Image (cartoon, rainbow, N blue to C red; front, side):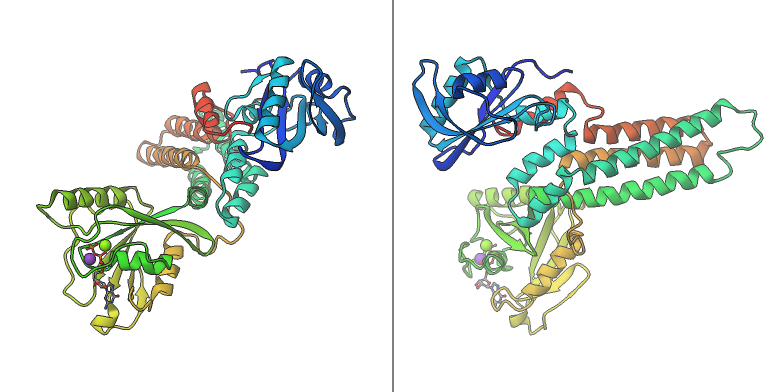
Length: 442
Ligand SMILES: Nc1nc2c(ncn2[C@@H]2O[C@H](COP(=O)(O)OP(=O)(O)OP(=O)(O)O)[C@@H](O)[C@H]2O)c(=O)[nH]1
Ligand SMILES: [K+]
Ligand SMILES: [Mg+2]
């Protein structure tokens, strides 16, 4: 797939009014279009003041022109930036002048797509550009920056290469069956595969943490009626947003609040108490509560510590981690404490809330992430998981049947799964899906 030979143009600054607005051009006609609009071309990479004129020679605005001749530009093509006054009208007139001069409007993510196609960055780095722009917290922005710098990609590519080297070595050994040494039996292959497996699992764990940073974390507050779910939401968000009453079945709609714990953006959803009910409105609330808990990264299972513990309801997800919260310790006369995945607290007095926050950080594996995280997406996590599954499968084949061929094939598939992360192996359809989710001008 080659970069298209046309020239694209878009407003690169957000919609609305601002001091400065930027129009970006990329493609073979960028420089000639810039010359037409600004009269004369300034030297490369130097901001120069020019009058911007439309096709009829009327002045639209005065501002700065910047030329970034390819290949040393963001997209690898000739890139021009016009910095005009940040008025939507001025920027639209300037865009119209670019279109009249031969450019076309860029689609979403098209600048990043060209950067990828011209090998200015790999796929995971292009995604990190979008993630950096979308970051909601400082931690997420720093993580995206590290991915943009290529830290994640280097690890993925390094592992893909190691898997490929081992596969090639196995295939070469299989081609010489006369050799005395039984290379599969001598244990070396197995220990090499297992070492790679360990690195893969570690990278998967970190990528999953990076995904949480990126997407934000979703915690569903679930439990029987009146356990204090809405009180907990209010206490953690320090806002009186959910209605709290002594009547069981108060909450029906799912109510969300975004909070920050240790610099992480966390969305809490308060839900209807789980119980059998004839009330069809409450029943709908219960249905929504179950949907929330299935899509959450973590479930708070809230129960009233002052009454006998109820049985957990059927349908608690087994693949979503769960923290058991024994609420109302002020009534029960328990001290605040936490152990494993349980915490004793009072939403009413706030006693023990700090223990809950610590448990959340530990449970999500973000305790010691410090500044070493990189941003990642669900897509990356899925590919890493796929690679890990292939390696596990290969090891199982090797131990069960001693088959080097099957192991080699699994290692090839594992390396391919990793290749899709950085886009060294990627289908056009995948690329289209990724870049179309970016915004225009990126
Ligand atoms: N003493 C004490 N009362 C609490 C505590 N947490 C909640 N309550 C009380 O328990 C009752 C129910 O609280 P809610 O927060 O509405 O409980 P809920 O789980 O959201 O209830 P539903 O939405 O009806 O399922 C209210 O009267 C609260 O004031 C607590 O920690 N200590
Ligand atoms: K209630
Ligand atoms: Mg409630």
